[in-house]
Length: 292
Image (tube, one colour):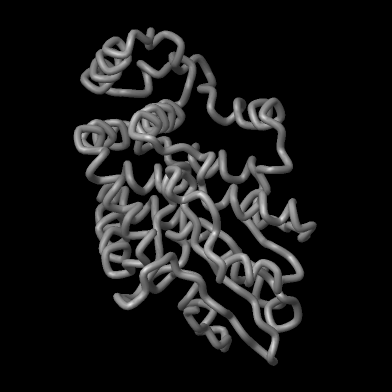
């Protein structure tokens, strides 16, 4: 897995978890306990297919037992028009830059041909940042194989909280997340190059990962994490910006609350594994962490 998976994991996949528990056959849910007060940590994916409709009972039971649900950003509270208004300033290029000026000649020509094959004029993307164009491409490809955010687990969690009047809190603002992607703009050419490599095998790649999430196959998911954030320059930068810094911020915010409040924390599942992941950090803070 490479930079494309790393970037798209946040918007599209936000893959998963850690450790190898082959006996589990459904997505992982963890209990975090201190002073007899239980909270929960659940890794989500942002798109799914019709087979992913409906949350597992153990997840809804944990939601019902919680005082508040904590998500990265409460997108259910933002209308589509408001989402567009707040996102576009980050997605649009500035200072006279264009998509063509941001990319190598070879990569721009590849993009031009890609959209031409779909009867789309690349000119409509001329003022968009390369990462925003990449997200558009991935969304189109995932929709072609039957996946959409309609069945995304995070949206289903938010829908359940609304139906059951469970308060929702958020860890970040939409603007923070948009700026995060702009901070990776120096990797634009690598991002586009690897997008094309993955689009050549998107069905096999994507379905394999979603199935790993469905089955709780932590060994496969951890393997993808380690391959994503390798020791290359862009591997280290993207891990630092997208995961490590944010995980550290979240731990600082959540640690004083766990053990006093009953929280259900639902975040993109790539935030859970490995040495900088939330699971290890909660353990290091002295909490009892148990997979349910």
